[in-house]
Image (cartoon, rainbow over the protein chains, first blue to last red):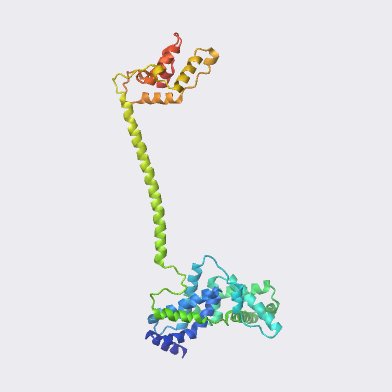
Length: 195
Length: 205
């Protein structure tokens, strides 16, 4: 159903309907932007990637046939743009803390829940910061995009085993961070269920 | 509870924590509205207009920059080498130009013979007088002869090696300076010593 709707919108975009293109943009903009933001951790870079991604969609809309699902295609373009963005940067620069702080959600009412979520955010942020771009792509696509391993393998153009190993490495790294930092609520969760 | 049953539960918990953390961090981020405004402007304007905030340098710009840099380096290197070759030619020309100077003493021609006093410069006169003062001294002074003048040695050797001179000619007599020294040594040498032991004779061998 969703694929049919996308195909209908794509057909209208091919005919030059700008409103259909805006509908497509409104439908996928946040997914692309969040994935780009999780990968680059730079709001300005995520904006540029979002803009380039949909400009490419508009430029290559004629080459997208009916069998192509637009979701994985957009993420594939996003991944390539993230690679390009990283290659343009001389070194990996983290975004400012203020910019990242503004993206965080509001605090919950319960102090304990707020403390646990704060610890979780810090742990995930540290894990993402310590991962390479390849691992971060897999993590963002799997946990935020909700794609399967096969879809991620198609998006990143790599074997499924590679996707699995990268996910395994990210999980192990997350465990290391939680245990080394002694984040008590998370350690209790992990040990309580796993040990 | 076995470990085999616990592992999937623990992994699922890690997945849940990671998913929850990522959504907490980035799941509520909204794309700014200005991005669509810029996209719409560029789509309506066509692909020929430059894109906003495009940090990409055009590929031909990078190629042109590299080409200019490489050309500059090559121009500098070749110009430097050409200058060296040109200077080398100048040296060769100078050396070749210097060659005919020696041809003013052709074989068989009568050389211009001047007295030593007429041709000596101030420095040569000083050396001449010093030699004149030191040679007739005792054996202690003769043990430390006056050091030879390097210019005289060099020019004498070059004259000996000059191809324009005949082998039977007296080399020292042909050169005005050599004749000058020959005359000086001849005048200063004791009558018992042979002239073959003079410095010019040794140098010619």
